[in-house]
Each structure stands twice: as C-alpha cells, then as structure tokens.
Image 1 (cartoon, rainbow, N blue to C red):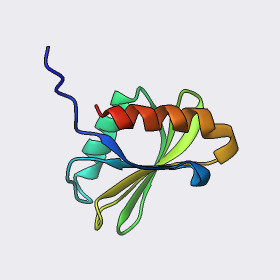
Image 2: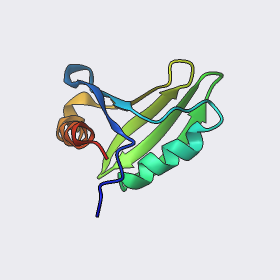
Image 3: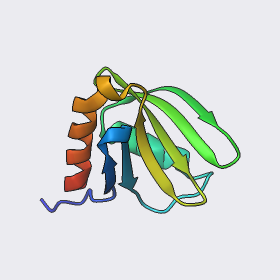
Image 4: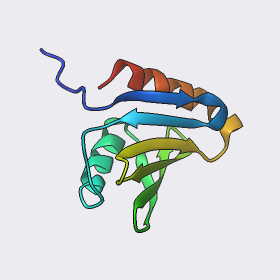
Length: 104
C-alpha cells in the first residue's frame, strides 16, 4: 500500500513556548472546520470546545488526557497546537512534534 496521508507535517516545534506549528493543506476561515475535524480525527483526539473570532479558530482539544489549543489563523494559513500547561504537556508535545515530523 502506498503512503497516501502526507497532508500534515511539522513546520516548527517551539518546545519552550509549548507550541507546534504545522503544515496543512490550504484553507480559509470557512473551510477550516472540515480540515480541523480531519486533523483531530487522525490524532484520535476529541474536541472539548470550539470558539472563533473574525480571523481565528481556537479549539480546545483533548489528546490522550492532555488539553491543548488547536488554533488556525486563516489570513496567514497558520495552524498550531498550544499547550495550556507547558510543563504538564512536554511529553505529549514531543510525541506530536515527532509525529508531524514524519508527516501523515
């Protein structure tokens, strides 16, 4: 079987800030919910809460018991994960960064 899931990848891992910036397919404000739902599903995570403003989506997600923000700013097409507690999320962030480094 050919590896066909290479739509998400690592752009930058900012461990000290508790942030992972990821590469995604192009999106706009209206198409992000579909893209975000696909990403959350691929990670076997769950959405706890969704919020959006004029130019940014902020989703609180649960990934293996670790709560993170999934944020997407449509003008720059930037998507990132942000830890609520950097100290408590180091292991999960490192795992996610390695997963995105491989791409899927």
